[in-house]
Length: 353
Ligand code: ATP
Image 1: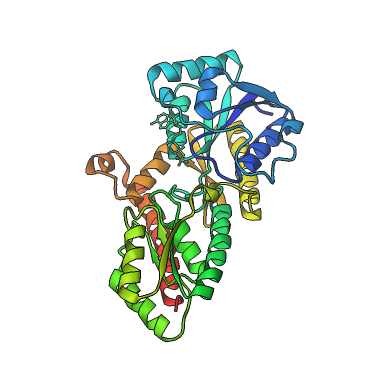
Image 2: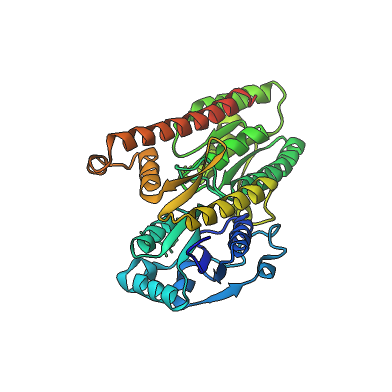
């Protein structure tokens, strides 16, 4: 038995394939417990605007294979203000919503904390193709985006082979190089450049020259969008320094769409059901994470601090407010994450030619 009578579900921030599978799992898990579900349209903007609909199981039928989000998404600056927050709370009260599951990125989780402290029990689910939420090993949409990237790069590589060309391909990921590293490895890129790790341009150029002299005809370089103002200039330098005709391709938003892969459908479903379980246990202000292949719950404040620590943004002032035990746990998560990233990066470098 649960104290809840009605919960809401919304998707917020950038969309990601698999969000629909999460919405479906949240809806059906709650309905099975006799709890009603409001589908809230357009993220926190829709919450403030009272744009929602009571969902039946049929409302989430046939969506598990669809990209995007049937609930739509939006960025809502007003929600960060006291007035916006007050509007959202009063809409929740008016519609008898006593719990919320929000699917999005770290901005969405900050909003979830704000709602939690004001009495609306809220649980977050990580949905972004970027895999840039450091508290979780995996974010919904990451696998689909990477599969889209490798499919496209494989095609580019075919034409590079025919014409003996190089193509520098810029992939998404915001400030995280996770998409670039894994797709670079999986497509046999001759070099992978990401914002958060040093890149030896000279070594990459020499590698291309040597491989070309050994008879290699196609050269793929994968660059993360987080390596700012680099990819186009590097394309020119490759051509000038190696004599290999070089092109630049920015894959863009094609990476955000498409039918979710099995990995995303399954993970989103597990996370959706887990979020509802935790909510009905009375938990709030938590985010669902995947850690070492297990679905776990993490306090949002802790998760946001892990993220800051991983991105070297945790100040001494922040650290002073965190217990030594939590700091140790945070360091462990960051070290594991960094080790996984380095392993992939090194394997990409070692196996590329
Ligand atoms: P993505 O990683 O895909 O960008 P995100 O969830 O981080 O996803 P944001 O645009 O940062 O995307 O946040 C989504 C929404 O969450 C914002 O439009 C805003 O309504 C709310 N939000 C963001 N930051 C805060 C905050 N500090 N306090 C309250 N609400 C916030």
